[in-house]
Length: 88
Image 1 (cartoon, rainbow, N blue to C red):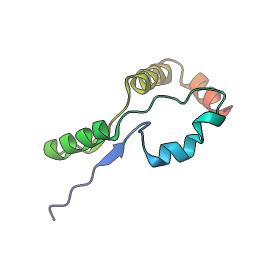
Image 2: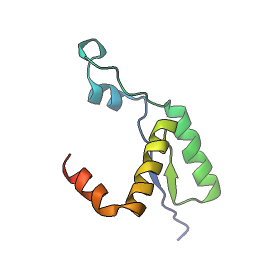
Image 3: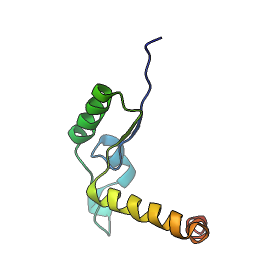
């Protein structure tokens, strides 16, 4: 059929959705987490289309580090990771 599907994991992206989700900057007691520009996500999507990739991960460096830590924890001690995530 010629149809291809890709799933996109955009991470934290500077957008109206992010602004709404995070609320008014002046009312916050803590700084907002850093967000990547939407152009970076768009470049990742275009690259995935050109390469025919099924998954697109457009994460900030901080998000990438966190994901790597979770992957290592899941392989070394999966039970502890499950219990830790269940308590959130």
